[in-house]
Every structure is written in structure tokens, then in C-alpha cells.
Length: 195
Image (tube, rainbow, N blue to C red; front, side, top):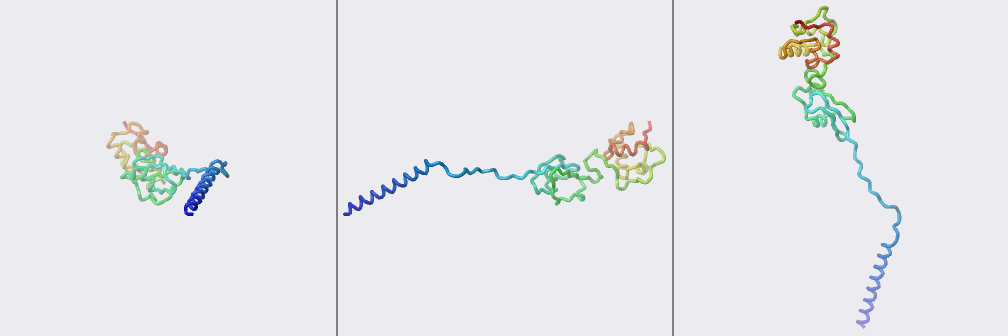
């Protein structure tokens, strides 16, 4: 009797295995149902493009992640130069795409050496000189009487003259850091160079 039970058990196991195998074959052979799942790439945030100029080590355009702050842009540009006026910069401010960040220096320039200071805060702009000023011999006080020229630019003119010699033409004054075309246009009728 035991042998009969063993045979029945073997037949049942074989039948179950046959059913399982035929079910697997049927599933594999049947056409797929529904639509295939397509995986899309994870969304990536568009970086912010920010121009950093002025008193930084490497001025230029930098791409930063969204939510970046002014400090991140300064760090990307290599940090502040020694003459940067850091007190005028809010390092915690959020950046926006396309923003220009200008770091002024302690001399009042906003774009680094050679850039123009259009008018100094302490410049005398109420009166202009009623005589021509020789920029090769004028004192700093005399230079301060020119439109848009305050103590800082007057000292730079004197220092430039001491380091590089006399100006050859009045246009040479634009070689002084902080004096650009607009400042020159404001003072050109009040200055001259002697031989």
C-alpha cells in the first residue's frame, strides 16, 4: 500500500510540475498587455548664469546652481582682491539668472583697474574753474576743482604723473585708473598740458 501511495505522490508532483511549466510557457508566449514603462531622466535644474566683475581675482561669467547666493559667485570668481570694498556687498543675497555682480574697490572703481569713476561722491561739482589747469603741474587741490574729480582721483593723477612723467596730451589723463571717456569729456575744456 505504501508503494501505491508513493506512486500516486510521484504522479501528483509530476502533474503539478507539468502545470507550472505549461503556465510559465503560456505567460512567456502571450503578447504583452498594457503600455511599456519608459523611464525619463531625473529633472535637472537649469543653472544660473551670473557675470562677476570688479575687484575679484577672476572676473567672468559663471554658472551656479539655482538658489546660489552672492558669496557663491564671489567664491567661483576666486574671491575678493585685497582692495575690494567688501562692506558694500551683501554676501547672503540670492542670485538671479543673467545678473551682473559688480564688486567695487576702495577707490570707488566698479570694474577693476582702468575702469571709470564717472563722478566721485566728494567731488566738487557746484563750480568749475574759470581758468585752464595744467595737469602736469597742478596740485591735488587744484585738480579737485575739475568736474567729477574728487580727492581720490586728484591723488591718482598726481601719483600717475610722479610715476610715469608728464602727460604728453590731455587725452593721456585717461591712463589714470578711474578716469574714462565720460570723465574726460567733462574736464577736457578745463585742462591743458604745458611743453
